[in-house]
Amino acid sequence: MADVRLIYDGERQLKPLVEAALANELRLTEAGLKQTENRVSEFEKRHRMSSQEFIARYENDEIAETTDFAEWIGELRLSQRLREKIETLRDIRFEN
Image 1 (tube, rainbow, N blue to C red):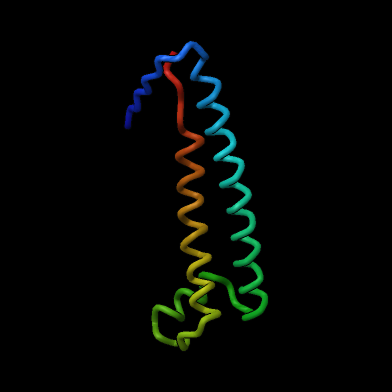
Image 2: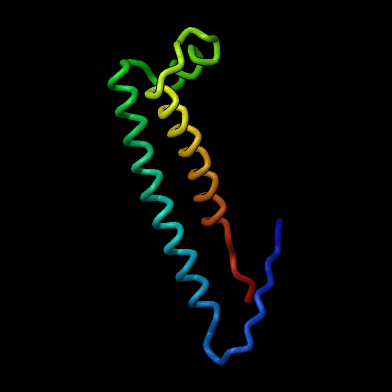
């Protein structure tokens, strides 16, 4: 568990501002994940194979390196990072 302490000397309430910023970041990250998942789905349809099959074949050097396949791998890696970020954002709690 990580703790973060914010120091603010102003008179306005800081908690609502931080909560709103985190909620917005979560919303944007979820939208990015949806877009990335759509791109992955397009690759799967275009190449008529699942991402799992693609990765297995790619790692076994059964598929030649192409720009299209490099983009597919990039989208898969991005989707994993976005899922991790979403999980982290959802787990943030405020101490009262």
